[in-house]
Image (cartoon, rainbow, N blue to C red; front, top):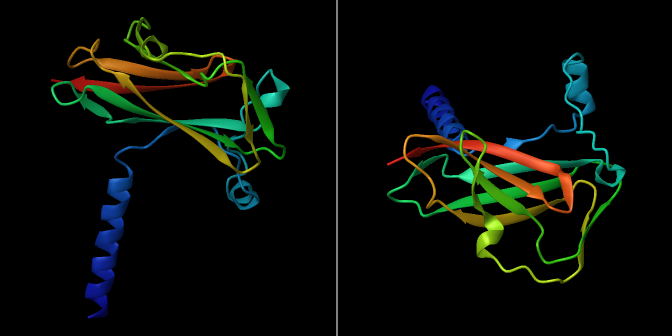
Length: 176
């Protein structure tokens, strides 16, 4: 009886792991714990180094859903950007307008097919975003898929116009 229960729990754990692997975000490097550094002393995963010292500690995660875009069913791509502060100090991001991010949809030749700002009005409203240590900010947006062709690889690039160093990209595949 105990073996059956263990087997059922094992199968459920595998199923949960497989479901979690369907949409994995593209991530920048993460800060390692001391235990991870003891176990793997020669692997080098450190925080990204930015030229702008105010951005130190920030990492970007990008999640584009669905991973394989069926053009007959999908008119909009869901784009989720997560900005995490893994540093020890709060990071302040200043914006002169209400636009925080820009999204480019690119083909394999790096040509820009669609810009997110083409379908959004930008107004001059200055604002400040504060990202405290060990906290994150999420940006959930959509971008049109009308310029995409079936059976090709495309990429989504997300960046902050005010802070061009904060940039992340993810590739995806299209189907009919």
